[in-house]
Image (cartoon, helix red, strand yellow):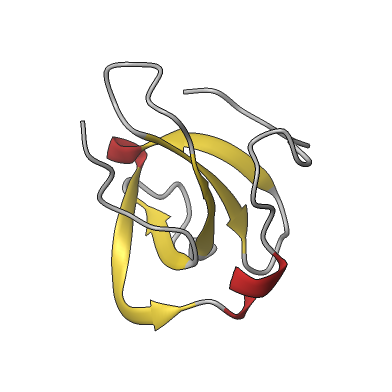
Length: 85
């Protein structure tokens, strides 16, 4: 299954729990290991990192992140605060 999002792309929760949800940045596209593409994302303001399924996020048009240059290149690099969907 093909991933819809790419590293550095800004996304929002598909079903936010707050009226003003944090914007997240895709920091890693994870290898296919389940029935749905997965991503590691990082909160732009909170810095919280987690792993989400593609159905849990939606894209933001025309916005990219300044975080791209500092992103880890490998899955084994820094997996703090990981939540699996």
